[in-house]
Length: 107
Image 1 (spheres, rainbow, N blue to C red):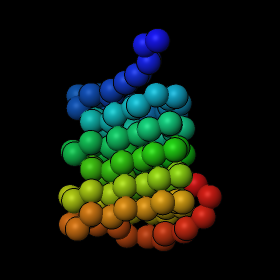
Image 2: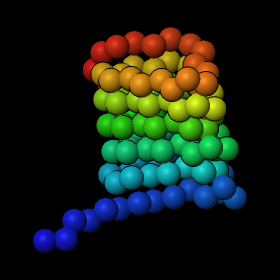
Image 3: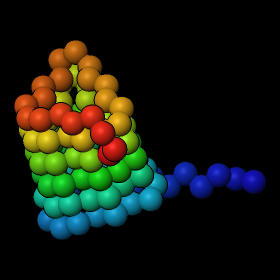
Image 4: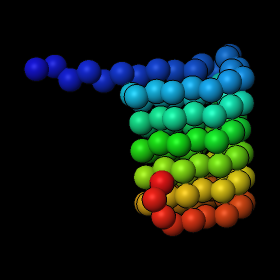
């Protein structure tokens, strides 16, 4: 049986104002101003996201401002996070910048 690996991308040249829900992997390379619910979200290098995000896994390489509630959050070198992050599991790579509040709990 073939596994369905959905991947959706918001490209570098695209900006969205509004809410997004995704049950697969979703990559943001452009700009999102709004709220979102994701199974797996990747905020790519150069991307800018602001709003409230919920999900299972959120990986941050770009810029984020707002509130995150997720089971797993990973912040990578070069990212900028400004806001509140609630997580069950958190990994922070050397060179990432996080300004705000971190809460360990149910994401």
